[in-house]
Amino acid sequence: MTTRTPASSSRLTLTVGLCFLVALMEGLDLQAAGIAAVGIANAFALDKMQMGWIFSAGILGLLPGAPCLHQPPRQPRCCCGCAISSPCWWCIC
Image (cartoon, rainbow, N blue to C red; front, side, top):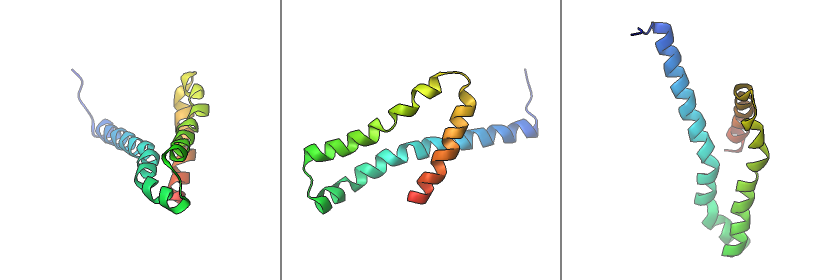
């Protein structure tokens, strides 16, 4: 049985907190597009087919980075991806 020291406990809390923030930010782009869909369609007079292309473009934008994460070493690539994308999303929001 292992005991937790205050340092390992705070590191665990930090890790869980960072994972929560990454998961929250990861879904933000999809949620924001869904909420804004009605306003976008009305402002640009788009039908459902055109809106489908807009949502597809957002999902297709995720594909180029996906193969990079499936090759070792993963941790530096994930950290770099989060470091680059998070400030960009905060600037947009």
